Image (tube, rainbow, N blue to C red; front, side, top):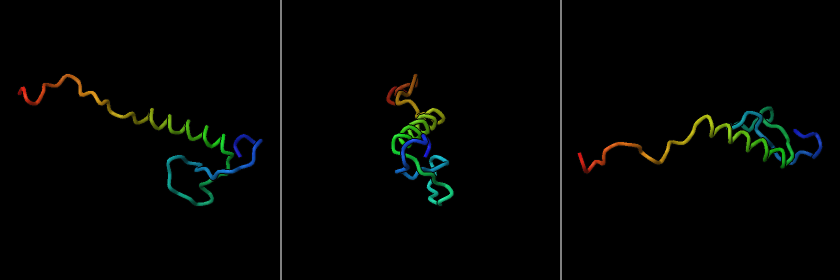
Length: 65
């Protein structure tokens, strides 16, 4: 329980982005807290490893070489 108010309804990974499902790696949280925690972790992951741009920049067209 992260918020300390609502009962735990979701098993959450203490260390994010892992596939370990051992009891010591999980904690019980309520659904609203789990959604909020997951959103923060996902935003941090996206910021740390941004996707490459779909625009290639200023390189010559291969047919014009």
